[in-house]
Length: 362
Image (cartoon, rainbow, N blue to C red; front, top):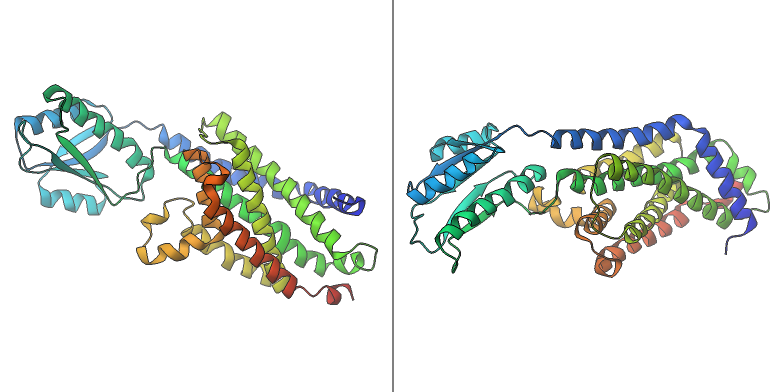
């Protein structure tokens, strides 16, 4: 049960934050701009050049090529195998199809290879269902018994969603981390520098009152800011959320608590504003690159996967993505839940061990 002192301090911390209007505006503008740019680019419907190597050169393979050509989304470019590889490596083509020898009406199953870049989620999720539909249409004309074709995707982890739906949970998780670290680590150092902590702890206010109030205040502030960005994505950009909003916000709340405790650890370790900035950067920016915010962790070198998956931001990004895009519930995220709880325990242990309250109050 919250005490009157804790509620009063919570109100004070929220008022202090609201006064910093410039910070509020910039913390909201950046994620909205990123999401807006992605949504705008997804509306581009220029034909996509796809290289095609037809080793079979049969009526059936030509029929398949013709059907793809009739789709306004694609511009099929006939290539030989060597030139296709060169154009894919140089980036002149975004994808390549290789039809092997033996694609005939009497064949059992033809393994058509789709060569793509696994980091381009938006493109993969656009092309895969269309190619599958083209194959099925041809198959239905020939037989209704056994499938004639198998589309093999190489070097991807398939997700049936647009890139902006993939990106939104990652952007929100990264925004959550920044706001939480700023609200705990930076605040502790700033309060210490300005003598606020020293004055607080010669009053009847206890350390637990201070910690509880700042955690509660930051939770309210971060949830409010995330809700603004979330609402912008839902109503202005037509982003779809498959899972429960209650589960989504539960994981957000747990994520805020996780990064607040880790932020307190950074603030407890740092002795100045300069050092807390350096420590926060060391903590934040490697996670931005390794935690799957903008692209799947699977696209990173395989050696990095186990380490990347254990990062706190990785756990939060995956949790929000599984809820938003796959519709998972809390009991389906037991492993992620345990991982976040473990990070909360680590953050709490480090912050209590590193922060010497008596020196601050003395």
